[in-house]
Length: 295
Ligand SMILES: O=C(O)CCC(=O)C(=O)O
Ligand SMILES: [Fe+2]
Image (cartoon, rainbow, N blue to C red; front, side, top):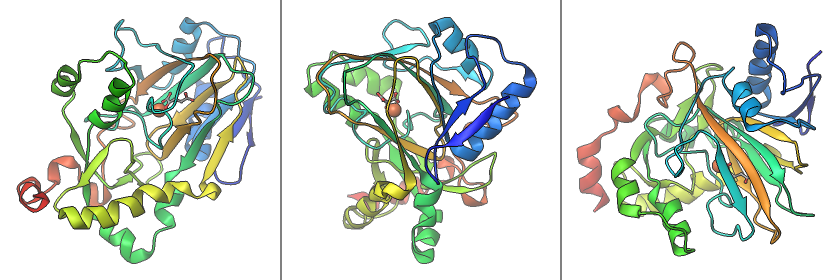
């Protein structure tokens, strides 16, 4: 029987009674899906699985994305790091929010780990939203933000990674999303801005941006909203990318190798377009006024 054992009060559960090397039946898939909605990130321990089994498990919950930075064109993204500082994971973020349809979830598996260090943290962004004063929540409910992959990629380029930044920007132009995202399955509001990719709040002046953005970015920092995972080889983490952010702690110098797939939800469950209160999407943002006031 599949069981969920909470790791903290507010986010994260270890899942037992499931073998990810075997196909799941419909009932098992439904139990895991519900568990994910409740706990936001699920940890599966001692799963000695192949990339194919990893992908087969992910396919129960959506279609596989081909990541923008994947040079080999496959769905498995390999993170192989010994010098992780500034490589992107060590900043609170939700995956690929520069996309019009960011991934619904990510499934990350530890293949090789340093002796110590390299933990990952997740934060509950429903709670981050709930922690704001009602007046600030109302303000946020009406705002939009621009998400751009340039910030995180240019850091990697600075570190010597070979990306053609201009080509990546052309292929992946910035997207605008509501600052508050209503989860299509739970109906709850989550704060949907992250320091890794948000460049500005639309329609606000530069000074207004400078005052408000740090407040919103830093709502994620309260440890009450967080869970920290100590990986073991064979641990797989599956998170709902819509109401969470995560942060990979860059405190190791030995090799750490992780395999990841990201998924897009089935359209009948979620069309994938981040949607705010009253059903607005990035397309409803006041774009003209924004450009003028930003300057
Ligand atoms: O390396 C990790 O633990 C997480 C990296 C990350 O941000 C991701 O896989 O999306
Ligand atoms: Fe990430």
